[in-house]
Length: 117
Length: 113
Image (cartoon, rainbow over all chains, first blue to last red; front, side, top):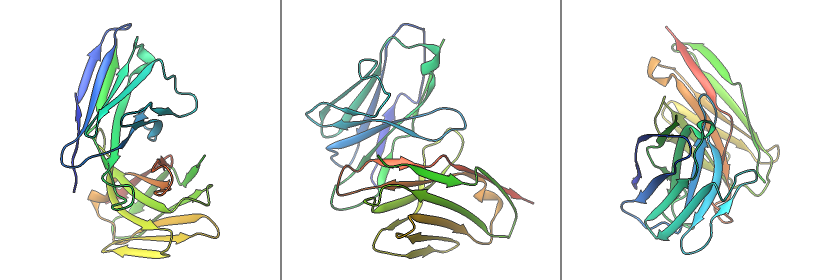
């Protein structure tokens, strides 16, 4: 199947700093990618839809100024957690589909475990 | 927007017995229903999926059923094995509208020896 790669796999940062997470589709183009957050023992909660060449669409309750999303190319979306705080510590996962009208399967990155100290 | 409810949150079954996880969805326009298995700290793995034009799909020990009228879908695992122990998520999506995948809250499945 198609491959989505996420980097870094884990990161520890100090409170108040910003962290950038990258999501790449390695063997297909993705006009749309999705960012999820997963707290321990909870489900994946959709944060936002990343649209290539345009603004991201955020889910209700997600602060767009805190979670900056950039989708500058058909193979790369980035999520920047700005002014991170301990409550932002979570597992962040991206996903992408290879084609809107073709394969319906979504491919997930391996996730990024963010710890804010 | 779409809302997916999943039950039970925890399920323990004897090895060799069957396990059933049930989900409901709210948006009648959803047309794609994947099931994922997630192990601790790993990405979700697609184990089976079903489209809205199909009522049932089977892949070896795993089957999924869909009742569009009732907006219910279920995962059935037969002849459970220790390696089936994991967290399972149902999800719903509209692949023609926005491709968003909305997840249920998950079921932690324990296979007892």
